[in-house]
Image (cartoon, rainbow, N blue to C red):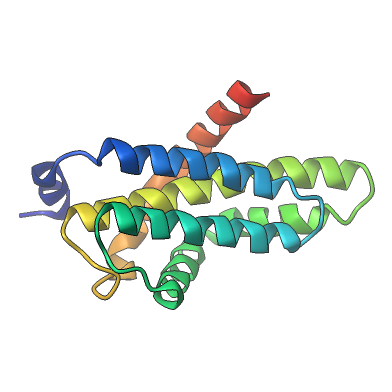
Length: 164
C-alpha cells in the first residue's frame, strides 16, 4: 500500500488536532512579528515545539523535546534554500530601520505561519499512521512537508487577512 493510500485508509485528522495546528499557526505568526532579529526565530521555535507536544498528547504519543527539535530542524532544512533563507533574511531585515523592519516583519510572520502549519500536518499524518517520535523518518516526510509548506503559505495569508 502506498503512503498516500495508507493516509486515506487511516482517515482524516481529529478535529482537536486540526484546531491545535490552526491556533499555533496564529501564535507563530504573532511570534514572527517580534521586532528583534533572531529573537523571533527562537520564539517561533518554542511555539512549534509546544504545538508538537500538544499534538503528541492528542495522539497519546510520548513527547521527547530533543527528538522533536532534531526532526523540525531537519524538516526546515529540506525546504528549498531560498524559502528557508526568506525566513532567516526576514528576521535579519528587522535590524534595518523602518523599511527593513516592516518588510522583515511581514516576511517572517508569513514564513512562520507556513512552516508551523507544515510541521503540524507532518506530525498529524505520522501519528495518524501509528507512528511515534522514535520511528520518524525525515527523508520520507520531506516531500509531504514541502507540499504542506505551500499550503501553509496560503493558510497564513488567509489568517493575515482575517486578523488584519
